[in-house]
Image 1 (cartoon, rainbow, N blue to C red):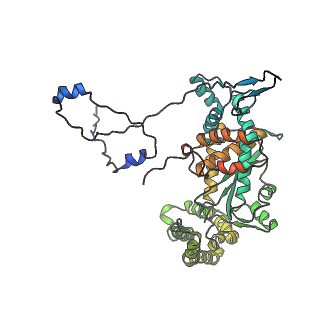
Image 2: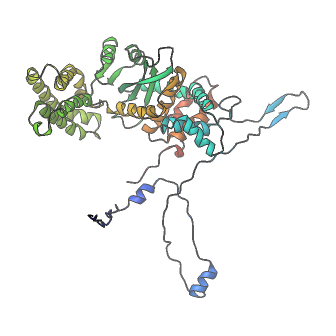
Image 3: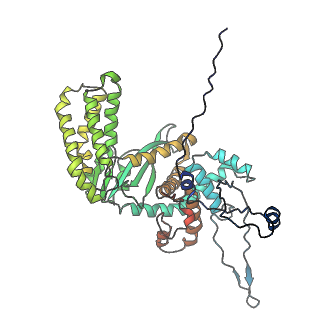
Length: 452
């Protein structure tokens, strides 16, 4: 019987990057713990006055503090006049929902679990049980819907109005299944996303909007008061809206163009790809992206100057090549589709060349949609239209928080603490102090900044 040879291979030794642990820990709160010898121990070791104190040896370890549930019992002073009997109560923060035990911290935990970490409510229910908190999925659902409608929706609407101030925005959409929307089972609804242009480094906004369909009426209504450039894929609906709205310009997405030629190249055997039309087009698109990538940290004016000098000639050459070889393309198939897309979208694909604030593609919106789709795989279906609309509001707050380097849980909790205290005010200017980039936000809401 043959014997098996077992090789004793030593584990690969990883070379530690100098200073990595210190950088990883920078920005986190530090709890010093001192381990010192007593005077008696020192005398026993060194004799009377026989030692001197040297600098401490310091070692750092992560400490994880698990969640816990407590009950805040609010005692509100009630006072009555001895003469006329009128009563007053001491000032106290308003509760979120009348008669409900839900608090900003608990609501934030539910929202963070479901909308940030994509944890289904049945799993959150089990997790809360382990901490001694009996809370049903039905209650959680009702709470988040009402809190979105009554409080977070105020910030959502404010962000919507702020989005109109951006010269460049981006848009995309994805299907979503609503269980009870008054239509036959299986008919898809859509979640639309609108966000500020990716090249704006600060004050990012990401908004989701639920709609039953994918037709042009939805972006038409959302964008009716917008004046600027909207980056999208090649979906014809956006081009229809552009023709109807005088102040709207649509810019195309080079990722969608590149993807189609990549798919055309993929059907060719690897050994036969070099020198093909698909191969040569991909090389030209890669050159465009390579030069564009160098401009990421440039100012809009500098980026525009470099695009005109370096990127535009590459784009011009690509479209000359496409038009010269158009007649050689088969009448059907992946390459035919890729050529058709690129040539039909040429007008929109060129927009970024004339404006330094316009990104070359719509990847930022696609990333926002991708995160939503990951969550969608976990919870599979939204039950009602109210649920979908509240979902859009909460998801918008979460993604906007992340885009501005805030911690979503802490931001949810802060908004749900502050907004209820201002709901009786006639205007909404208080929301300026609650925006994700407001310098008045507490530092605890911001992600720790690691040292370079």
